[in-house]
Image (cartoon, rainbow, N blue to C red; front, side, top):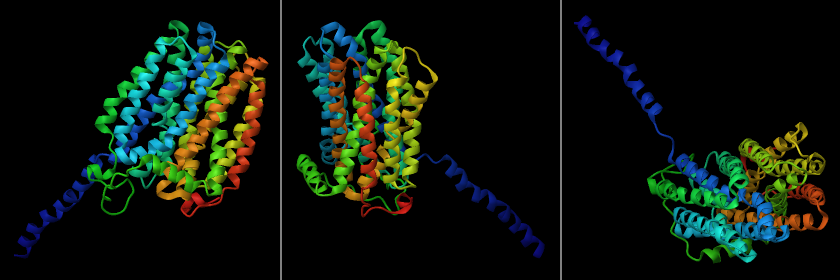
Length: 447
C-alpha cells in the first residue's frame, strides 16, 4: 500500500515544475504596458511636426532670391511662428484637459498641413507671415513640449525622466529624417515641393493619432505605468481652458522660480531654434559651404541630440536638475563662442566636434526643466511648463529676427554667435539659484 501511494503521488510532484513554468511563459508573452504605445504615437507625432521646424532655415535664401524679400522680413515670419508656437502651448495643455489629447492633436496636424500647403501660392510677405507664421505656429504649438509633458504626467509614474527625454528627442529625430530630404528637394526641385512634403507628412499622421492615442490610462482599464493600486478614475473635463491657463500663469508668476526657469529657457530657445536651427545653414552658406552639406550637419546635430536628450532624462531621474541645467548652459555658451572661427567652406574635424558637442546639449535642458516644474507646481506643472516653453519660443523668435537683421546690417552673424554665448553663461547662473520645490524627492534631489 505504501509503495502504491508513493507511486501515485510521484506524478503529481513531477507536474509541479510544469505548472509553475506556465505563468513564467505567460509573462514572457505579455505585451508591453499601453503607456508605451501611447508614448510611441506621441513620438511619431512629434517627429512629423519637426518637419516644419526643419524647413525655415532652408527657405531663407530661396525666398530672398525669388521674391527679393530681406532676411529680416523672412526672419520676422519665422519669429512669429516661433512665438506663437510657444504662446499656444499652455492653452493647448489646458485644451487637452478639456477636450482630450487626441482631438487637439489631430486638429493641430490639419491646421499645420493647411498652413504649409498654402505657402506655395504666396506672393507677398504678409502671406508668409499668415501661413507660416500664424497657422503653422498655432498648429505646431499645440504639439509642443507641453504635449509631451501631458502624456508623460498622465501615463507614467515611473520612468518619467526617461520618457520625457525620449519624447523630446522626437524633434531631433524628425530633424534627422527631414533635413537631408528637404535640403535635397530645395536644391533640386525648389522650395514649393518641400513645403508640400511636410504638409503631406502631417496629414499622414492624423489616422495614427485618432486610432491609437488615448487620453488617460483609465480609458483602457489600466493604471499609469509604475502606479500602485487600481486604475484612478478619469478626471472630469475641465471647462474654461483659457481661464485655467491664465490662472496657472498668475499663480506661478508669484514665485521667483518661475521667472528663473522662464528666463533661462528663453535663452535656451534663443541659442537653439532661434539662432542655430534658423540661421546656421545660411551662415555656413555665407562661408561657401553648400546648402546640402550645412543641412546635413544640422541633421547630425539631430543624431546626437537624441543621445543627449535621452541621457539627460536618465540623469534627471538621479541628479539635481538645477546643477544639470547649469552645466548644460555653460557648455553650450562655450561652444557658441568658438563657432565663428570654425565656419568654413568645407566640413573639417573641429566643425564636426562642434556639431557632436552641440547636438548632445541641444535640448538636454528639457527633462530637468520639466522636472523642476513638477517639483514646484504639481498638477498644474504641464500648463506652467507650457508658459515656460512660451518664453523659450519668444526668445527663439526674437533671435530669429535679430539674427536676420544683423546679417543684413553687418554682413555676417559673428556678433550674434558671441552674444548668444554670453547669454548662455547668464542662464547657467540663473539655474543654480532656483530654489527646491515641495515636490523634490528621491534621487533627483541628490548632488
